[in-house]
Image 1 (tube, rainbow, N blue to C red):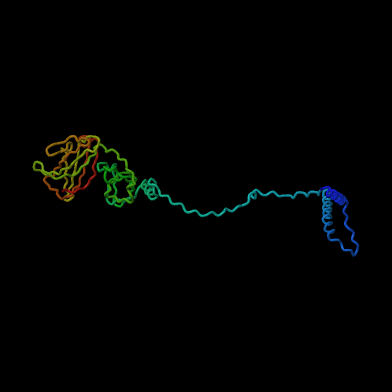
Image 2 (cartoon, rainbow, N blue to C red):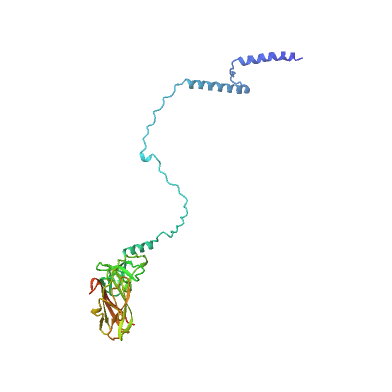
Length: 317
């Protein structure tokens, strides 16, 4: 049933094969003859393909061009090896919160005060002062300061020696003065505590107690304490009434003993305190100002190691 269609298709296939095997030639157009538009559109792509093949063959057969010599280069200087850069602007950060100093840190003002205290504080004497080897009146005097003199305060005394200061005098003496007559400039709390030397043998303190009578005679009574390291064997005390000019003292016959209303104390041991009675020969010194001086020694007859007490004034009650 399908055999006639196969026989009809065979002649048509032969015609197509013959047409593909024949070379294509552009149709010749005579002068005045119009070209066939369909034929022209078919031939143009074939011609462009042939031209492209020819150009490719020429490019492959053409000699390679001579390479150009390299362009000479100049080395960069060492400073130009890295390009200069400008730092990028940064966002301003908030100021840090100030740190509060710990209690152990020393403020600047305290440091300055401590330094000044270490070097000494200026002071002025407001009265005449004895400058002693230690912070007590029973230490020997080594210098005398007058009112208005300038000194340097170096240290303060321990608590048991109230109101005494170690100073350097204008005569370059380092000694101790009583602070009642000293005007100190600055904070004394930062001053160091001075080293107190031991009292010398024969050192003694004396203070006024009262007026009294013994066997009908009037006496002035003092308290005497041995402040030295050795016993006191002899003692001299002199009293001058500044109101009348009269002088009262322990008689020379009693200087090797300490008289106590009919009794004698001999010797006065270290640290021991006794009453010393000095006769007034009937005078009454109540309300008077007296000047007291004295000397104590480790042997009889005011000999051995002795300490002299500088004169000091007191009012008699």
